[in-house]
Length: 319
Image (cartoon, rainbow, N blue to C red; front, side):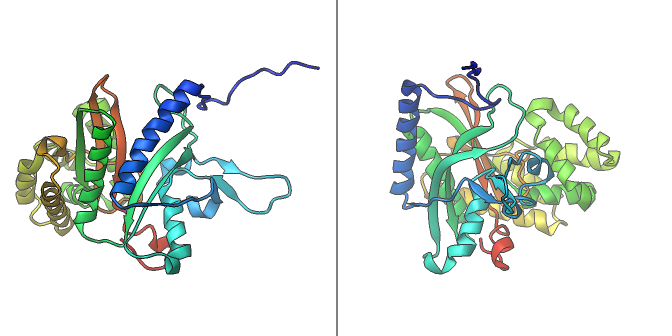
């Protein structure tokens, strides 16, 4: 019998029993928090129709989808890239059976054709929680409250949730004079600010063909990135003539007010004007959590509001 090399595809992992037990403990804690906050579990299959997945995440992410097929099969299929687009499809298909607002959680693996590098894998678990059918910023604040509760329960003491709003980012682009067609380039470059610095962002924007004057106005606003609520007051004055920016600022202010009402300490979150989140479906608040101790783990949670995604499947927007 010929010998077969025992090996895994790149970016895939085996877990030994001790590691599995640790993962099950973590998932158990997170599940308990989700249920304590009143969220219900759902299940969706690993495979989705390719048309369900394509065109929802943004051009760069679409390139990372795993296509799936079997001999003789006629359906064009793909492995799910995240648990969010499947949720939008799920709500559109089962809306008449769901109580609104619908509060769901889903803990399951997803697949992305990333180039494997330290800390990134092609198969990994996501622990998702979403509120469907609530337009108020109270829903966004509740998600942040929930994730800070989960991290505390897991023993993390030093972390911060960075919060921004896509409407504010769009407004900054409009104020700077970035053409609508180049806003995607703007998002992608600003999203790399922590890795490449302001100079790197400036060079990337220039390489994208964005005018120097627009880049200068952008850089001036990004100087306020870590100013918290004070930064919002400053940029509100500068962006007074850009309605979508003022709408985003107003939503951020409401969200911070709700976070206070929910008892989330101010030390646990900050308004960060340069925090983007890369996916194309976000429409309002976005947030990302950074753990600084132990071991400076970096970003461990991310999310945001996507009011138009379910509408792609049902023909009418649903927050």
